[in-house]
Amino acid sequence: MAVRKIIHLDLDAFFCAVEELDHPELTGKAFAVGGRAGQRGVIASCSYPARRKGVHSAMPTAQALRLCPELILVSGRHGRYGEKSDLVMGILRRYTPLMEQVSIDEAFLDVTDLPQSGETLAREIQAKVAAETKLPCSLGVATNKLVAKIATDTGKARSKSDTYPRAILVVPPGKEAEFLSPLPTRAMWGVGPKTEEALKNLGILTLGQLAACSEEFMLQRFGKHGSELVLGARGIDNSPIVVEYEVKSISQEVTFDKDTGDLETLRQTLRQLSAQVGYRLRKSNTLAGVVRIKLRWSDFSTHTRQVSIDPPTNQDNVIYTLANELMMSLWENDRQVRLLGVGTSKFKESSRQMGLWDTPNDKERRLLNALDKLRERYGRDAIQRGDSVKKKDPPG
Picture 1 (tube, rainbow, N blue to C red):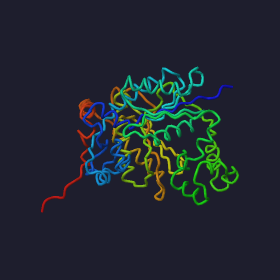
Picture 2: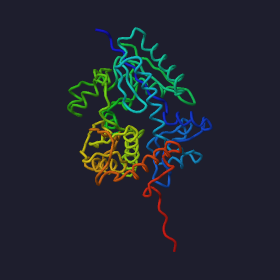
Picture 3: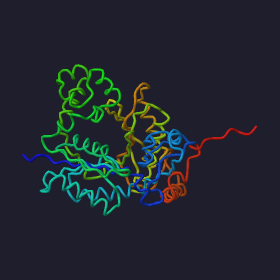
Picture 4: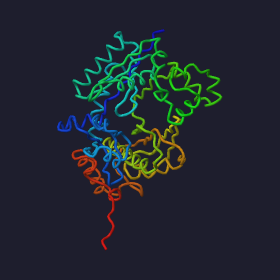
């Protein structure tokens, strides 16, 4: 049986890279894509000069500006990001149909059947993406998805570049455990701040120390998750590439750089994700009959909830309202969130929308389309919801 050959690709600071392409004057400057500070805005992505000042994604914009007063704020253009993402994913599909798109800027490829080495393919893919889209990316190569992903993250962290890392890191077959051994436990999926602290209390600081634990020991202390952590620390992962040949859902999700339990930040993020999903539904002339959320806690336990809608919708606020209700049905005050996502499914073609949830007439439908076009051209902050603008106290 052939040894698996898995490539993980991550577009470097994707939103910022797209903005620099369209606005070269931003190159080398500390800037971020995100909402305004006065509107409880949140940073969606930030440039590497901004990261060196301590700014990171999911940080409240007001806090980012305190850390980096010269920070330039750019309004997100999700239609544009989607276009560039589609180009990159199209390049990847030329290599193999065994491609799993994880998010707008991240994907796995199973290239086991190709004759070239993983490193050769990674360098070729990186060059093609740069030549055809002008976007920087980093890649990890290994025998499984877990180690390939960690290879990408590690390669980026080791980069000495002052700008996009454009890293490539290959973990040879049989060297998985050796590669993982010196890394801190938080480098692995499934180890959030609480799990990291719990492991630290047991004297386990590195993945090598975790790999040396018995599965029984970890099972007793962490349940099934504990034995999975041990196997992962040993470089063992048999999860397959998940391929969807047809669009069964339209979704957006974000993994926070730092886990957060701030409900206001989560709701703001949920609203942004709902707007992105609504935009994609309208662009595809589609209505959704199901709204779903995905919530991953810091210990990597993941939960989903969904609700059916009748009649179906493609409106941002309807999606957000339902998504927020679903999130609150899962909410636990003392827990930190690692990932938040909004998804829709059960599609039908958009011809005429009716009912309480949806646009009642052609005039309002044309208004939604016009707003989409304005935001595509001038950014999402060009048109804002009234309740997102900070209200001033009345005079006197």
